[in-house]
Length: 261
Image 1: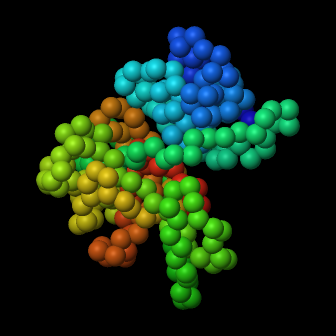
Image 2: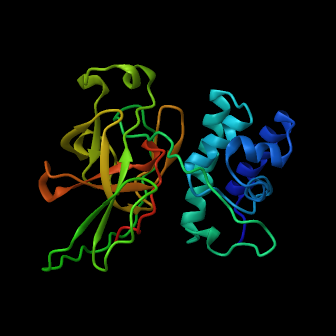
């Protein structure tokens, strides 16, 4: 696999944090709950983590500050987007024969979700695939993060993602005040603003059900500068058409999902 410039920058940040922590890969593996061979791949740039939980675990194991964690997460988002653009969505499919089995943190990290306002966007012009509607009803399978049996053929798999608001006050307030509510987009390819949101509002820690992920939508950045063009399609029975879109930058959850058609 060809390494991107974004992956190299992410690897350099991994190496810096490890060097400052002054620990071996074995010690770091015990702290992070990730195999030493996988950590070595992260630091060498051979592998980009597929789950943001690995970013949080690595940063915590190295004693990173909040600012350093945000920077590491920002670099991961860029590397992950570059990998996706290159069509290399699953680089871990072919393991190295001489390395031990890999393991990622099994506990899902808290998730982000979208609040309108103070976002920087770069519009992208892309072709939209035509929607294919079948007359046959399909089964719906709900999967909690990290668990669940293989769905039957033809089933629609809905995974859970939890809303996360990066602003501290909105994370701790028990009441659901309008100022802390966030909108879900009608169309992930259009500019994400007040004219492109459904009526349904969400708040920090709300759980949404998603059935696929879209790459190359409108770029959305959170208040810390972390941005991505990935979106989750979520199912809602309170909006016309039954679907809306959540920017992936607003969740740490990264369930295994097909690419949206």
